[in-house]
Amino acid sequence: MAVTSVIVIGAGIVGLSVAFEALQSGASVTIVDRDPAGDKASYGNAGGIAVTEVIPASVPGLWKKVPFWLLDPLGPLALRVGHTPQMVPWLWRFARVGSASEVGRISKALASINSRVYDDLVPLFNKVGLAGDLFRRGALTVYETENGFLRDEHEWEIKRALGVEMQALSAREVTDMEPALGPIVQRGVFTPQWSHITDPKKVVDVLRMWLVANGAKIVQGQVDRVYSTGDGAEIALNGGTTLAATKLVIAAGAWSARFARQLGDRVLLESERGYNTTIAAPGVTLEREVIFADRKFVATPLSVGLRIGGAAEFGGLQSPPNFKRSKALVKLAKLYLPGLREQGGVEWAGHRPATPDSLPVIGRSSASQHIIYAFGHGHLGLTQGPTTGKIVGDLLFDRSPSLDLSPFSAARFSFRKEK
Ligand SMILES: Cc1cc2nc3c(=O)[nH]c(=O)nc-3n(C[C@H](O)[C@H](O)[C@H](O)COP(=O)(O)OP(=O)(O)OC[C@H]3O[C@@H](n4cnc5c(N)ncnc54)[C@H](O)[C@@H]3O)c2cc1C
Image (cartoon, rainbow, N blue to C red; front, side):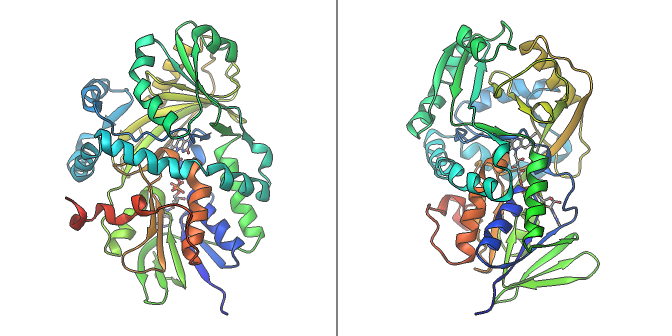
C-alpha cells in the first residue's frame, strides 16, 4: 500500500504536534512554514498547561465590564478602532454565545479536550526528549478582595462539575505557598491539575528538530493557495512552487481563515494579540504559575525567567504591536510581587488565533475529506496542541476519534447553520 503523504501548513505547536502523530503513524510528512524556526504564538506564550481553563471568554454579564476595560488604554482588553468594522460578524457571534446555556455547552466541549491533555502531551514530551520540561506543580489564582473571589464562584462551580480539582485558600495559605506575593492578596484558589513548562520556544524547537531527525521534511515558504484535487490536495507557494500530498492539514494559527475561505468554509477567526515581559533575574521566586484574576494577567516561572503576560488586543494581523502593554503588565505585577526587579525585561507580543466561542476548529473541510483543519486554539494552543495532534492523526488515518468533534466543526460558522 502507498505511504500516505501529509503536508502540514504551520510549524507552531499545533502543526508540529500534528506532524508528530502523522509521522508516528507511518506517513511521509512535509511541514511548510514561511519561518519554521521563527517567532509565533507558540514561541513566546506563557507556558501554562492550563487544563482547568474550560470557561469561554464570552460569559453572561461580561458586557457590563467591557466598557470599563476599554476605557483604560492599557487595560486587559483593547479594540483597535480601524479594525472594528471588520470584526462585526465575530463580535456578533461572541455576544450570542455569552448565554448560560452556551457557556455550559462550550465548557463541556473544552473539558472533553482538556481532560485528556496529559494522556497525549506526556508521551509526546517523553518521546522527543522533553520529559524534564514539564512541571506538574498546579497553579494559584489570586484575588485582591473577597468580593472578587465571590464574583467568580459560579465559574468555579462549573469547573468543579467538569472534573477540575480546586482548593480555596485564605490570604495566609496563599502566601505560605508563594511567599513572594504581597499583602494585596486576600484570597486564592489552588488548581493542582494545571502545570507549566520550562520554555515554550524550547518546546517547539526540540519538537521540530526531533521531527526532522525522524524523517519529516521542512519547507520554508509562504503558502498562497490551497486546493482540493479530489483524491488529495495541493498547495501553491509564493513564487510559484506547488506541492501535492494525499492529505493536507491547515494549522497556520491566526492566519488560517483565508485557507478555509479558499476551500469554501467561512470561519470566524481573529488575532487576539497578547503581550508579555520576561525578566531573567526578577529578584523573586514563584514555584508555580500565578493567575491574577482581578486584573487578568499571569506570571510563570520559566527557565528563561519570570514571564509576566496577558492582554487581549483585537487589531488584526497587520497592526504594529504596542509594547506599552508589556510595560503596563510589569507595573501591575509589582503590586502583587513587591520584591520584583523590573530591569532587563524582554518584551514580546504574539497573535492568539481566537474564535468567538473559544473553541478550536478541528475537523475535515467541507471541500474534501483529505483536507483537515487544526487551528483557532485561542488561549489554549500550547495546552491542547498534542491532543489536537492525536485527534487529527485519527482523522488522517480514518480512526475514530475518542471524542465528539461536532462542537469543533468549521460548519458552526456557516451562514446556513445560523439559526
Ligand atoms: C501572550 C500569550 C500567552 C499565551 N499563553 C498560553 C498558555 O499559557 N498556555 C496555552 O496553552 N496557550 C497560550 N497561548 C496561546 C498559544 O500560544 C496559541 O494558541 C498557540 O501557540 C497557537 O499555536 P498554532 O500552532 O496554532 O499557531 P502559531 O504558533 O501562530 O503558528 C502558526 C504558524 O503558521 C505559519 N504560517 C501562517 N501563515 C502561513 C502561510 N501563509 N504560509 C506559511 N506559513 C504560515 C506561521 O509562520 C507560524 O509559524 C498564549 C498566547 C499568547 C499570545
